[in-house]
Length: 137
Image (cartoon, rainbow, N blue to C red; front, side, top):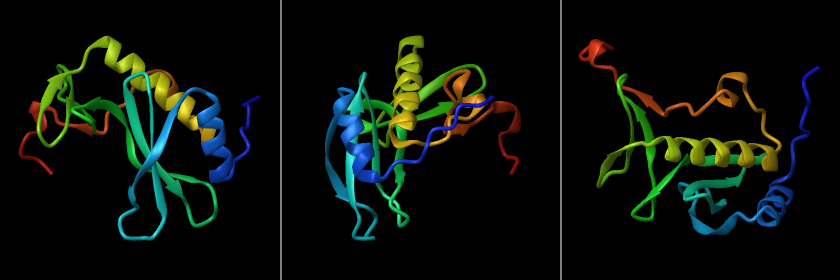
């Protein structure tokens, strides 16, 4: 039987994250909504979270490796995964992918979010840009 993790309030999630050696700091205003956003970091990875209208936790910036102080997006080009920010792009190593996966799983558990089967098998990418589908919508 699947283990159900009860949803946690945003305040409880912040407390749990801080108690599990995550660095939690204020980030920015959540896209003008007035919600206070926080950046959480661990293992060289980061994500931005804020309180959802229902009091739970919502992701503002998906978990990614920190490059130059920015949270990178994981891009899959079919033959290689890359870590991409607006300023730079580097090939992702197995160590990067393992750290992002561990960070994501711990963040989901602390927030009481669902852990999906396909995501628990390994790191999933934010974008898939395969050469064979270039130019197709």
